[in-house]
Image (cartoon, rainbow, N blue to C red; front, top):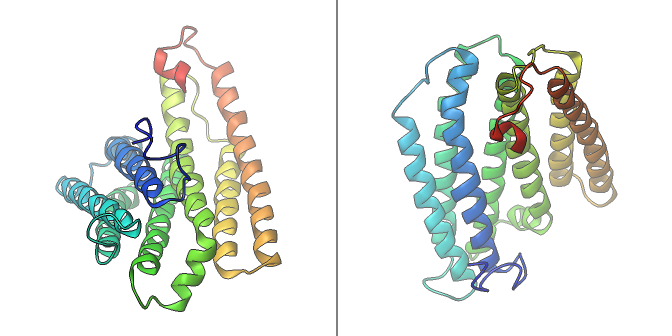
Length: 266
């Protein structure tokens, strides 16, 4: 779609076809990839088997079906095809249901592995933001598609798109990737895996920063939103700095001198 000139950068990112492309990437590519990796990773870090071997396929089918419905709905917003209603809300409900099934399966597996090591705590926080991201997206779908959408959904839609992105990219993608890297990089580089104060504070500050940005943006208005966003960015930035310091420490304390290609990419 992008190379054919139907989507960004040929048109605005917030055009309906731009939303189709964005969600094909973040749902169809990134989220499915990360959920598939977590089905393998969470049992490793908890030393517990995955709670259900059947829920992943149900989650996959729900997300793919919902993504298809959302794509049709976004095209309907642009006047192409069958219209936005009921495709956008129905697709959003299916996607959120798929996320909820995945979070339930992984969450129970994490619960059974208590006390959770640091990487698992990052993953648990990331799963929470996955649900928040899905819930915000469903609110947007209702606001866009329903003819008499509630006023509060329209209010959130008016200021919520950056919050949707912050919860998804900052909370779901970034926190999960941080947690995975604490375990996998130490393993692949043969570096000592020691839970230090910096890792714990990297989680606390990053989590608090993204949460402050999202919650402040939803509940606040005007200057309050600006203050919450600024505080959230600074706090999350401090958490990321601590995390990057830990990654540098892993690199310099590694016992594997010649790194494999996957570690070089990371």
